[in-house]
Image (cartoon, rainbow, N blue to C red; front, top):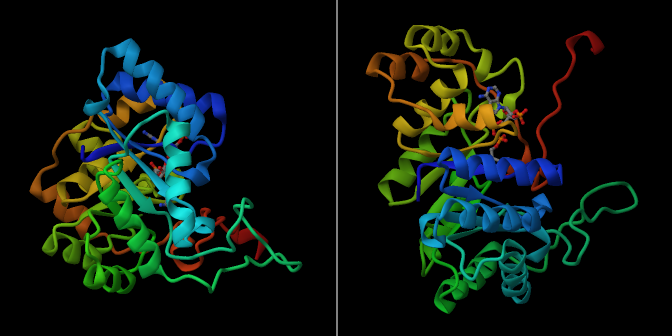
Length: 296
Ligand SMILES: NC(=O)c1ccc[n+]([C@@H]2O[C@H](COP(=O)([O-])OP(=O)(O)OC[C@H]3O[C@@H](n4cnc5c(N)ncnc54)[C@H](OP(=O)(O)O)[C@@H]3O)[C@@H](O)[C@H]2O)c1
């Protein structure tokens, strides 16, 4: 799996298609998708066009997509997988992830809510049973590897211990404000790749992009703060996803170079701690809105 991947969490359909094209042109060969992003069709179309235009073969790219929370019941896993494959115009996937460990009420409504607006969870299925259905996809030959996203170390260990096919990848939020050191250690010791999302803190400011340590290193080495954060992620042994909508930013985020040990140490010593996405606690996707201190 290429350690630097391009994420397709882009709400607008045209922007999704443009960004995927820019990413292929810039050199990205790893694409992260999800049924929940509701744009697998656009990603599939852009990938197909980009591969043809660039003379790039399917085997040269690595494509991931994710099983959404409403499809955790074992009998729903294969149809969901096949649906994603079709939309992405692919005949195999490199990686399929369980998007979150939370099962929602099964059905076509991706965000099932009760009258009070609360998510309707599904107590009729457990994660190990969903995992077994994921393992059967690997047996079937159209899915090369499986993994989990938005899990805590406890949940990962539970699946890891009982799994016949071990998780290959764990995708979680990670950046200098949320280094996930314990999870990374477990992954390294057990041959699992930790794939970091929101490496720039989802671009939320204030955040890692404006951290004084990151700004100072960027100025010193002649790189941008985004390039420093992406380089840090890879150099500490995680894979990382980045997402940008303009061609210039896509190229910027692909153009990263190694940091000195001193720079790595400085970033590792940052004390600020902040999670930007609460999905790991609820299964509900979305970045935590910033509270305007003036409104308190
Ligand atoms: N498993 C999950 O639950 C989960 C959750 C979230 C994300 N993900 C995956 O991870 C991917 C990346 O997550 P993310 O979008 O939060 O990543 P991110 O890279 O931390 O944040 C992206 C934001 O940063 C901005 N940005 C990008 N490049 C920049 C640069 N060079 N300088 C300044 N700002 C820059 C973007 O702005 P513009 O859009 O204006 O370019 C965008 O607003 C997603 O696309 C998705 O595939 C997974």
